[in-house]
Every structure is written in C-alpha cells, then in structure tokens.
Length: 254
Image (cartoon, rainbow, N blue to C red; front, top):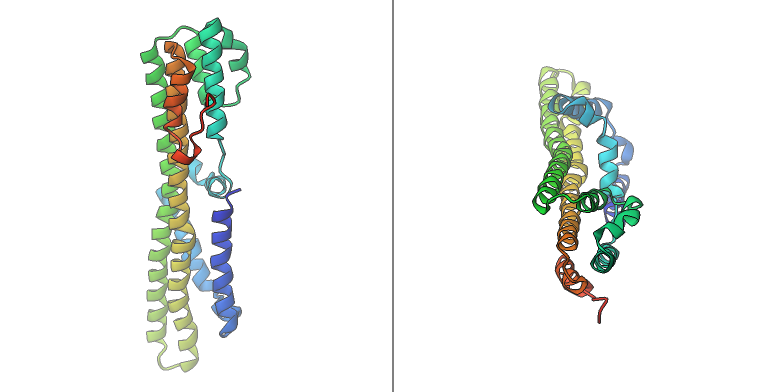
C-alpha cells in the first residue's frame, strides 16, 4: 500500500474536520442539498462523459492509486540477467520451462515470441503496441479523476448560483436566507474539497503509476531484445541498470 497517498488523504480530511470541530462544529458544514448538487451532479456528469464500462471501474481505479501493483526492478534485472546467462550458454530454447511459469505476462509474452523464433522487429512492434495501448487506457482512467475535479468545481458554482437565487427570492423572509446561503457557500466548499483533495491528486498519482509501469515494460523490452540477440549478461545488466536511479545501480558482477 502506498502510505504516502493514504496518509495524505487521511491527513487532509482530519485537519479539515478538526478545524470545523474547533469552530462551530462539524454538523454546521453538513448540508444535504449541497451534497446532492455537488456529489450527485458531478458523478452524473461523469456518467455522461465516460462509457459505463469505464465508470464501473471507478473504485478499482481509485484503489490503484492507494495500492498500486509493484514490480521490484532490481529483482527483475537479476532475473533478466539470469535468463541471458542461460540463453547464452544453452540456447534460448532452454528458457521455455521457466518462461511458462513466469508471472509477469508482458515478459512471458515477449520471451515466448523469442523462443518461437519470431523476428526481433516483429517482437518489438507487438510489445510496443501493447505498451502504447496499456498506457492509453491508464491515461483515460486517470482522466476520470481529473474530469471529476473540474466537474465538482463547476457543480459547486452551480450550487452557489442556486443558493443565491433562492436567497434573493426570499429576501422578505429572514428565516429562509440562512439555508439558502448555506447551499450557496457549502456547494463551493464541497466542490473545492473534491477537486483538490481527491480529483486532481488522484489523477496525478495515476499518471505517475502509468509512467512507472511504462518504464518497467521498456526495461523488459530491452532485456528481451538483448537476450534474443545473444548479448553478454554483463552488457545486458549495464543497459538495464541505466533504468534505475544512480543509488540503486548495484552490479551483480562487482
């Protein structure tokens, strides 16, 4: 679990709730009409903006931000170097049994194609297409949250206008001014909270997750191409270590 994301979300809401409680109390900031306008309205607008199949994955996409799939890149490099060592010694066909049990589907597909004798250009083309399509899907998923941020802010403004109209129409009744002003102000607050605590930050971290996954796949693709061409394990390791931050670049051959 990404503790940074979890702690950040919890911390923001805890500080907001604490500040409210120290003032007039949390209850004063709860307004059902405002919730209906901002949360209901923004989600309804999202349903117009995206396909049902994409909206069904809303919670799943959110969980990717909270608990992303992890790939140990150092261990992955070690595995690719081991594959290269075995392929150079016994031939690439010797990897077949290990590849069949490989949990990483992208690596399994690429090495299987190499073992089957596919041309390097064909392997690279197919894997790059898969990388591009996966990245495109991830970007669309991330755009759901960035769109939600914008829509929540817009619905907050709509709620403000609704509250102001109701207030102006009931100026003769002082008891009606308070509830109308509550709708006007709280819808803006709800829209700002959704947009700046959930929508935009979640969209940003999903973009980072996509970049990390793409980097891992580029590293795997480099490894597969090197294994197929018969590169020396030491040379392969040098290539793959360049994908890591300098402080993590520890060679097995030192």
